[in-house]
Image (cartoon, rainbow, N blue to C red):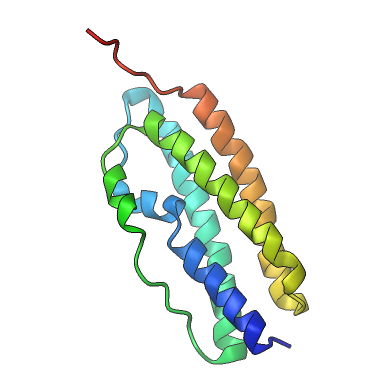
Length: 149
C-alpha cells in the first residue's frame, strides 16, 4: 500500500530524476569532436534507460494514486551547460549522478510498498551501473584546458 507520505516521497523521486542533469543533457547538445560520437551515443542510451525506469514509476503512481506527478522545470543553472564540450560535461555528470544515487539509496528504507520498492531499486541498480560507466567515460575523455598565454 502506498501511504500519503510514501506517495510524496515517490513523487519527489520522479520530479528529481525526471529533471536531472542527465535528462537535461538530452536537450543540451554537448559539443563533441569526431572521436566522441560513440560515447555521446552511449550517454544518450543512459538517458533513455533512466527515462524508461522513471516511466515505470510514473505509471505505478498513476495506477495506484490516480494522479500523474508534476515534473516542473529543470534547474536554472542547467542552461549554463548548453553547447559545452563533452569532456567538460562528463565530470559534472559523474558528480551529479553520484549525489543522485546517494539520495535514492537514502530513500530506499522509507519505501515499504513492494512494487514501488522494486522499481526504485531497479533505478538505484541502474544508476550504479551508469555511474561506473560515466566514470570510465570521464577517464577516457579528460577535459583539455588550453594553456595560458
